[in-house]
Length: 359
Image (cartoon, helix red, strand yellow):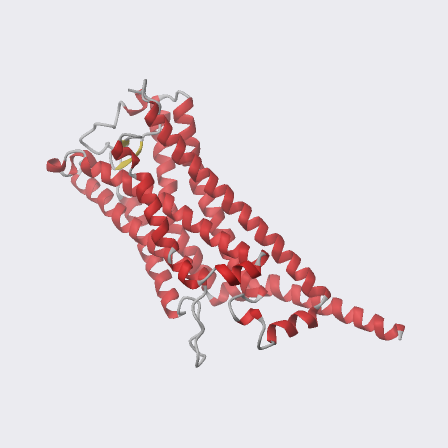
């Protein structure tokens, strides 16, 4: 077996010098953030306006946000208490339940890999929804419905359940990591064990492709939003008249460009977070599979990568909470929206005055 697992893969105790303080703080912050995010979503009716007599149905984007928040909350509640219990009893996950043997470590690793992949897939669904609503409105109106948006979370869960269960079928392996409070996919190449290498590289490659696809969707949405604002600058009256007409498709399911801008900013912040927290794991998987790593360096690098992956479900809801506050939105609209509106109005006024002077 590769030496990078010679120290902790079978250790019955938590390593000396490890503390549960950081884990407790992260668990508290993640639990509070996800609960507050769900409260905000519930109060807003998943994006609907409660002050109107006839409340419109919730938007697909906010249904996806709610699914991502619930996924993060479930992952945090299933993973963190086990880590804290291991610290409290000073036992590794393999010895925390002696009667269960190694099954607790296997279940912990499965949950970690499941929720890490599920959150990334749901973020991609949000990015794809934003890109389609801006760049392909006719396709969006016809095919992207609220019912299909609700089905995203169950379909993502079914796929991740089947994919992350492959190590139980012999393709891949779950092992314990230092300091004895983590279990995850084995990210080293054992001799004559290509299945271990194949699954770890496959998992990392899938994560990398999902992150890349999310970034590309966000870039496409930004380009479409820029094109939309250029069109609005040249034809302000036409665009505003189209939105206010009773038969306009804007009221059916498409959002106002400024609301799309809000969604795009929230999605961009989440994408930056997912990218920063996923890259260390992707790097460790490839590095551990194809490059020999010294023992101490491998242990510390693996632990840092797993901690980065767990931070996603903690910081992600706080981004949503901060973005939904009135102070942040007021500053954002003052910095970005008002100058843009003034620029559009000023350009239209100049064009109108030139036409009048020519007459």
